[in-house]
Length: 141
Image (cartoon, rainbow, N blue to C red; front, side, top):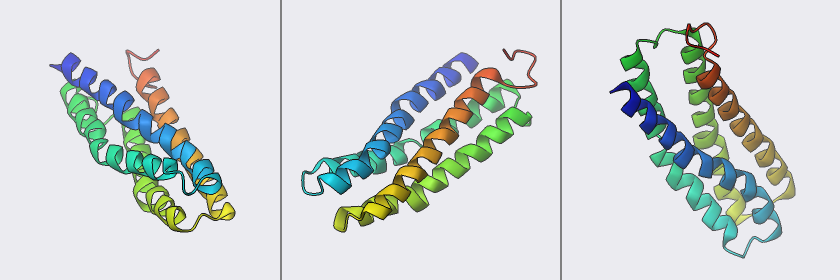
């Protein structure tokens, strides 16, 4: 059962978080330089839609952690905190900023959004490293 949960968790992370990372990174440039092309709207829809589906990633992650008996391990707790921060950035900063830029693209807003998206992507990169290395784990690399 653990292998199945872990597989679904990893596949969900790749299939659902990856597109958000790419679309969110591309959005500011397209919203600023091609506001009427429809590309920015599509990128925003991708971010919004995949964000909702992306809830599956922590759900399966928690189920996997519970099954493995590692929910109290520091590497997992840190990963969960970083995941909550990344989700909050997406829901409270990135998606609203994208929506605002669709109606009024501003260069300074694009720069802030680019930086925020970079932080979002960096948080996910750290979570991935923690998931692989699992510091303090007897099975860690």
